[in-house]
Length: 275
Image 1: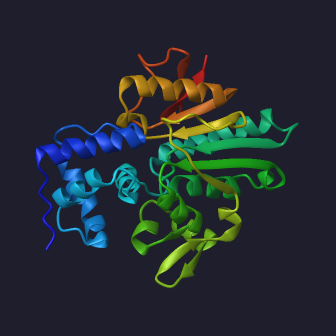
Image 2: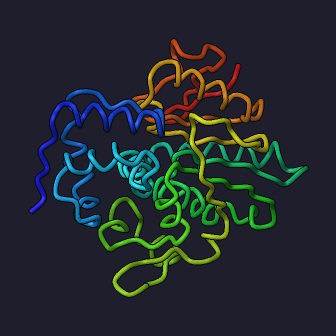
């Protein structure tokens, strides 16, 4: 029997561990997240309680469990075509504009930061394939990154449960771009090959990127403190094309964080551009 109660000292230790590994801030009142997310890990590792887990972590500072906990606690919920108004604006306005601007070089660069298990980048890839057949003849540099190596492996595989494909995915896309795989559905190879999944920690030095035409960094900034938000936004500016677009989550903003951005209305939603 696994005891899931977490005392204050263990909670503070785990919060510090997650912050050090990812920069993500977990405050008091989030104890339930550890209870919910660590339960499967405890069963997998045959550890009887969170207290025993913390004891093991304290005894071995290089334990693989440290990274596992960071991965578990920083993997966020995602589903296909989350916030459809965003994808409508992307399809109706942004991509046609970029196709016109980039028609000489015939190349687009797209980055999905914090891509989790892959639903967001695959949503974008399917839209590009479905709505813009001209892009099949273009060079599409499509990078998706996440902190967790395990979740990236799952994203590369592109295999989803019946429950997952029923969350936001239009039936016509399921039938056209997925194939049945046992009890699951797997994204077809030609869509999976459009995306390069890379491991990346946003609080560590950033790798070299090509200039990005579109950056999706949705529902990420909300987990960081103000200084880290400013740092991430400044780094995005350095990789974003002068006429590129940044998507943040609906509860996120650049206001009072980075005045080099301007909010750009877009049909039923909005995105950001550099002034």
